[in-house]
Image 1: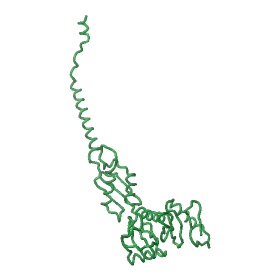
Image 2: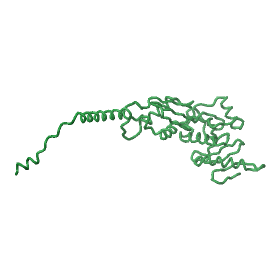
Image 3: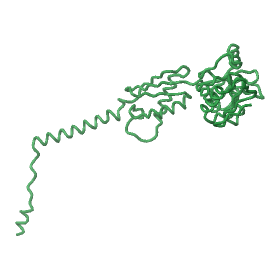
Image 4: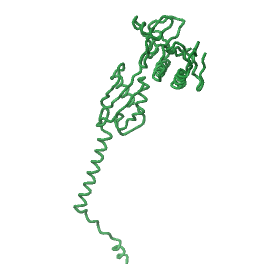
Length: 280
């Protein structure tokens, strides 16, 4: 009886795979190898890595400096990934654009990664300097807040004509900042912090682009955001650079359009409080 049980439990060896099954197995192995190979080509190799930066719209900015900033941003991204840091498929163009705007102090940066190995940038620059004058001293000041050089006679004459309202100021021109200091200015003098200089330039550009023509800007002190924007008519418009500049500009323009004939501004127009305009 035990012998019968052993015979019943005995299993015959599996027959070897047929020729057709062996061929299918080989093709599956080859397909897996091919799939892994293509995955490597598309995601892990340098085939789609950015190797060239094309820059458009720049005048003051150097294309080499821009490329250096782009690669620095791409290479500094945190987190592990199987693909190269410069892989064009995985570039967050919005984040890269915002980072470049900040680093390059640009008005706008458009990032296009639709081309193989090429990243195209369209940059709208912002001026990288301003004119600062104290009493009768006129100096160029860079983004670091350092007075680099005194204006030439021709440059000084042009600035004075703008201050008098005889020359117009555009959004891309270096703004004129007026602040009478107690000390004399010389090359190398630090006028203010880099952040404050950039704030003045950005504020001036925003005011101009929103339709308010002005002669100069007078910061009331280094510790507040209050500014006096000298209008084209020669009177101050009091603004707060920490608040919504376009809204303050529109409030002033609405006042200019609605004011009756004969209404004169003797001292200033204050547009710092939303919904209200104070005239003196």
